[in-house]
Length: 338
Picture 1 (tube, rainbow, N blue to C red):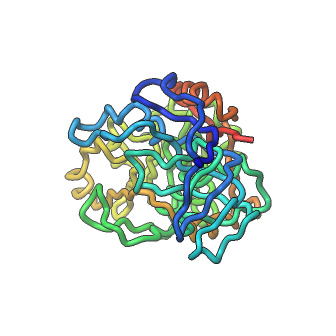
Picture 2: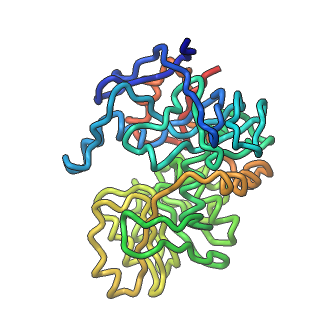
């Protein structure tokens, strides 16, 4: 007899209203898996892209999965069961994870649910100093910032470029973070500061007090000042926004500096970068439980904190997606299942 749970599923691609709160089969785990009773799950940009069918991609790249799908990758919860090969976690442990990413990029990792199957290698103990909401908000954004700025953490081929992404030493360097108010951006500001960098945060004016409080040395309101003109001789620009005209930052980076692109699609400045002796690099964030454990110490000690834009009951996932689609998110949006 199949056990059921509540989950948010989609039976077709489309806008937020295609997200349906309904009964779904509770997942079964394999020998290397952990079953987690989800307390909270957060939204990330890939959730919105998949819900919409990745329509911005070329047609031959778009997914053609079997419906229904359950979106979401980032969870925090309590271990409900462990596979026979799992010894590092036990029933009752509080844990958090980015689940099977990018492996389930086109099918969803099933985090918008009361229970989720998680490979033990994706999982880490939840930092005891934060609650499930904060922990669920962290994984994808935290791992993205960590893998760009601290340690790539894997040797998998890079889908975006022919060479391996390598973080650069930041102690004593000047770093500009574009999109500093968002999920990745506000964590990147804090991690760069922790590494000893002078940090310039670029966001809309409403984020100024927050980003100053998080450690930014200088704040730039891009609605008043063009970000690329706000500073010169930068060692690194981390662009967490993407879109058109990312190459505009090249003129503000010193020779032998770097431009890191969280979303590189559309960048057209490679020749200019080579002429200026600037490294342009990106990487695909990947699930990594051991890195979450490392970065979790910073969360536990309050060196890095996750900002929450808002919380919604799991049953109101469509409202959460509508909020995410409005843009200008301050930190992360979280779904609460309990």
